[in-house]
Image (cartoon, rainbow, N blue to C red):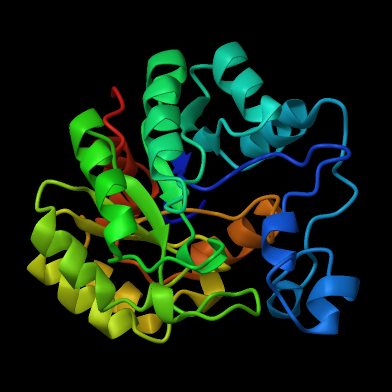
Length: 288
């Protein structure tokens, strides 16, 4: 028995490993150190142990479904940027929630049109942003992002955005957590979910979540044993409705690693169903 036994889990950051597809080219073209360019199989490999490997297959959807079933994950949110994601949400609509392609603020009109097209074709429930990975880099509060935020409000979908020091060896000022304050002030109806930890500004993230009702935090790219203590404490006090589970399979963590750690997270009993299911269901407007 685990503290969350019986809770149907929603994973807001899961995906597929496709044969012959380099998903990190857009990052490595910006890095300058030799390890990132020539040695790492994923750009933040120095941070992760046992990055899932040997998963490339002609049927990546089945591989991910098998891992989800093994660990009680009822629903996974996946990007429709690749063929595997598109096939997953069409073939298994009860298991996969579609997320739009990552936004590109260097192509505002192209991004806006793509968001509309993916919303009409797939019914996307969110989009994602990786400010440090844009090329040239565009800050979270930059003018180029504002039409994209406006489109999210128009479509009534949240944006999941990386915040804090980037894992890859890229400059990170564009992801400083304080920039989110500007965004929430100008877009009070926007639902904004941070990704990848907000470190070392997790205390600031909490302060902003208390301030802005539509700001949330997801735990993507962190093994549960490394969830920031401040975030766990916040969930256990006034922030139970604000913290959302997200994994990082297969990009950096195995589900075996995540759920091997998970039972040891010191969440209070009332936090678990909100963290693993309810908050994501509400933000993504899922049934049930």
